[in-house]
Amino acid sequence: MKSNVSLVSRLGAITYDFFLVFSLVFCIGLFVVIAIQDGTKNPLFFLLMLLLTFGYFALSWVKGRQTLGMKAWKFEIMQADRKSITYKQSAVRFFLAPLSLVGIGFIFQLFNKNKLPLHDYFSKTYLQSTKK
Image 1 (tube, rainbow, N blue to C red):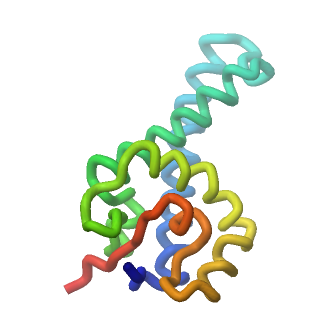
Image 2: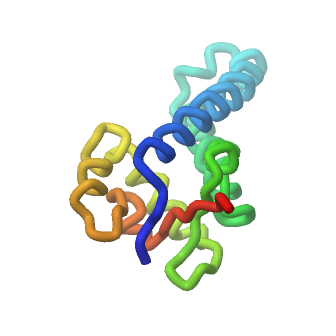
């Protein structure tokens, strides 16, 4: 299956979701820092923020097929059989996404026949436009 979502649309949704996730992590992190004085030095703080970020993306992708950024840019994520993705696929996608953000994955997209960045290729997921 070939993705019909442009790199520009992907980057737009990523930017939208970045600000949303940053705000979420900042607010929850603030409560943790207030509750546990000097909690940011604890490795569990980093793990909590990572799980919070993964939770936002995984729940959005698995349950609704879209993050808020994807909804704003009018595309959704799915498997080749058009079913919703699994939590395993969302984990693969989430942990490989940083490679795309630094450029490697999106360069891969430009030369891939299905226009899939690295994280979609290895998670076997596809982005499809919801525009009518």
